[in-house]
Amino acid sequence: LARYAVSRGHSSTLRFLIDRCAGHLLAEWLRRQGHDVVESRELGPDPGDRALLEVAASGQRILVTVDTDFGKLVFVWEVPHAGLVRLPDVPTEQRIALMAELLEQHRQALEMQAIITIRGGRIRISQPPTPADKLDALDQIVAYPLRTTVNSSSGAMRFGDGTLRVKSPRRQ
Image (cartoon, rainbow, N blue to C red; front, top):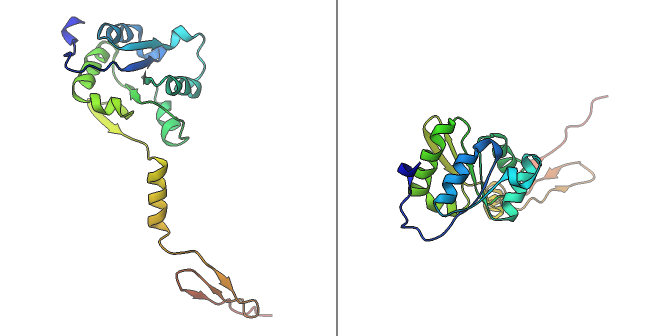
């Protein structure tokens, strides 16, 4: 484990919450590197994925797990987080070496609360869209005011983009 020591060029300590499935050895290694580490097993019975992610977020801790369900919680359900490292296909004996690499090469992404997934020997770093990003995307989709007017006598509808739609009369 000593061979995976990370250089001490970085002064800030990172805060981690290690999921049960990620392992005690990884937690101990991170502690020896000087990081603030809590293991989920120290918190009592397994509270479930969503609650664990919320605990990590409230403590400003990066959650480290091998469970793939957390990605859905972050990206689909938009559960707040303080960063996530997912190691779904990483064997136990390789987790420490990969975390050493992450700390050495991608520390800034960890500090910026990125979602990092290591799968098949590849590292994917992403951020879920912020509320401002979502509003920007909406502005691009809705580039003109959505005013729709309806002529009550003819049933014609004029849309905000200027198009006119006239209902055809019903045949009897």
